[in-house]
Length: 350
Image (tube, rainbow, N blue to C red; front, side, top):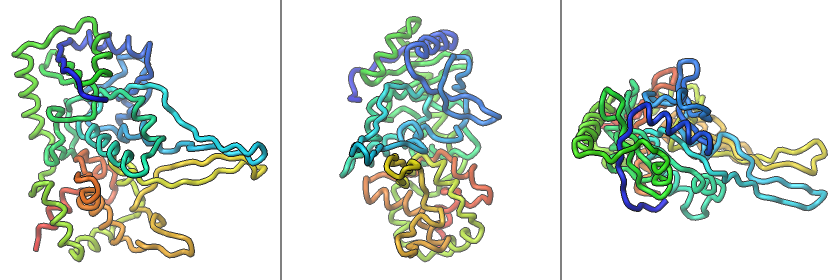
């Protein structure tokens, strides 16, 4: 994943589709497709199904690195075998928006920290990430406010696609050896011109503003201090009155990584597997421990914790604000209380 020489080339939309069709014949490739009027990352079989103009996916591409459910190990008391299970077959995630690239980069830091998570890292090392500058901003995106609107200064991806004109011309910007390997297979690509690079800069400048559908009234770096002095703010109890504790905001978030681990036994109670599944701090039983004690049994405590986790706790741990501005939580919340911009702006009230 180390950064090497940078190469920027130009390709037409039709040539890009030909390139993608060639890639899916030799690689496992996941790309964005439309399913019942929603966009999802799924296994791609042909280039014509790939949607590069999507606004936002239902679930983030995080699911390929930290699956909703995964087997960590198997065990057999009869043979006394305990075996770890790893999935490390190479794959490509194609068309990842900048805010999701940033989320994956943060997960990389977290899962390498302290006791490194070998299962996450096996998948991560097997992956090639093709980033994509946003063509169609979603109605709730605020990545521009969080500093993650474009691929201009991003790290953590291998190749960046940017559509620069109405004719469907794309620039392909490879940053790593994995990226170069993909770009080498784009036979019709030509070196980008100075004028094309200028057009890309214009896209970046425009997206910096277009991806501010909700306007944050402070700089993200001010959030840890703001939250430190806002523990007793009335907004927590006020909004929690409407909360269903459904956890939808957790489950669609690209930077949430909490999980539960359970053993699933066979009928003979001697064989089974250890399984990891997504969990979320907004769920009523998330902080419950043996004996029935729940450290956050009140909805207001759980509601507040979510925002502290995004704007303060992650910053204390890795020096990053772990809200990337994708807006999925806003769209997923049926009672409309999950908008981080609304809450953070409200905390500015004295």
